Image (cartoon, rainbow over all chains, first blue to last red; front, side, top):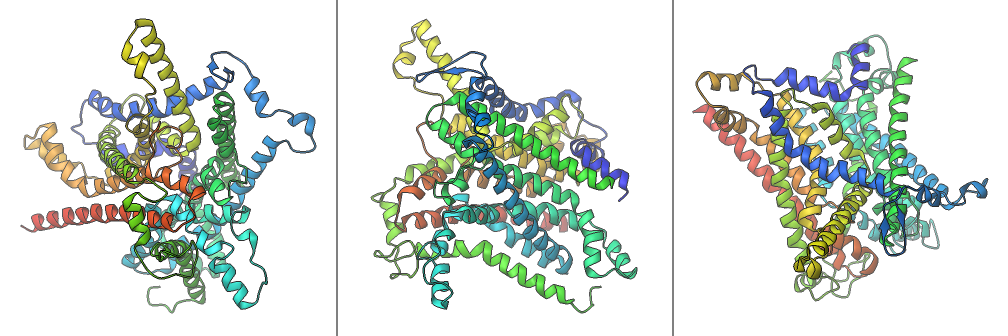
Length: 319
Length: 295
């Protein structure tokens, strides 16, 4: 794959997808463009009504005023000030909001690292060490089956294992490794990272596996013939060519964790803060404008993270 | 390379993969086993006898939860989402084979809908419907419509806002699958149909549709399971009703019996069964096609 094409693919993924699907599939005796527009209308309407307008309303309401009884149209920055209330004066100590953001970023980073390491290793095994396609497909399906079940169930499934009287504590006591059950196994930062990794590692495995399957095996053989050791093949051939998959997986995992409130809530025993969770709490107390302001800040944070990620990858390619 | 002896790294990686599968499935197996806990049993091992006690309690609705209404509501919602996801995705997939105004924009919006945190989308839809409710109520007062003044509460409902929220989550997956399908689709079959005098509808109905049908099952699987298990986007917008995942999440803080494991086993079994049914249909379709082409 030429470097130019590769960069192009990264920069303009959407355009590339579009041009691919057109080039490959347009029937030459095609429909009139009017019918294409008509066919896209249902999807456009759904996204307009249940995605675009809601986001616009959120931004709008974040500037509204609210009293205990109602929310009123206005144009005020009070909600944003309330979100960061006392943050400047509290420095160098972190105010609640900043601490919440920091904790959310910490989870995003840790879960990203765990899912990347585990996901890459699994994808690498499937793509390069499993030799026949049927076995590959079977193993891949085996990895995806848990994805078809509810996230809540996959969270509570840890309780019998990690609880005070759970299997892990029981086994450790049995072995004499500890005297008292470990309290931090359940309802702690550790549990949140573990559960999020468990839930979303598949979002890393699938795109990385997909990238790896497209790697021309001749490149690997060429590297081996040129005297590269296994480790060098990995770092010089496989990792660079898997980069699109790593990037897509990273975007998925990081955005999911940044907006998460369920896993942090359930696996943190409702004691650990995250941005998503504070938005949820504010909604419960009907503080809609503050929740909206928080949501807008979160959205900006997610967009920033994605653009940083895209830049990071591009910069490295330039070096 | 195929016949080369396996390198040592293979065995390390194979061990890692085995541990990974254990990590994926271990917890699930644990709750499935524990859901058959005896009547005296608790939330953790050891098993205190084996029984269907906790399933029976779910069924009777005599336990801590009323799940049957949530179960059927979730099932209806997931089936509706599934059908709409397939139909809308196919239409959009056909549209994207052409050039049309706003194609790039629509694709970007679809991808954004995957990436924007679900709590933000949920809040946005809740706010949108609050504004709609406010408008309807003030209109009702202004025009003196008694039904609205007396009985109107909210437009939020699993089949209005809920359905929309689920579609905003399933459609991006559907669209991306359709891209993958049409990228591999050979348009010369359609051209042949046209040359033989098929109308545009006939060429779709008798040529395109049968060829893409097995992949549509994939879209259906996504549509069903994503909706059936959806929780984050649903959380603020179901009005006074509950879906099954919402019930389950609420139970995590209140229930202290294996009943919650029984419910977990039941919903997992339901979604896996649905996947199995749809995949069987896909296999049958493919076989029928193979038989036909032999004839």
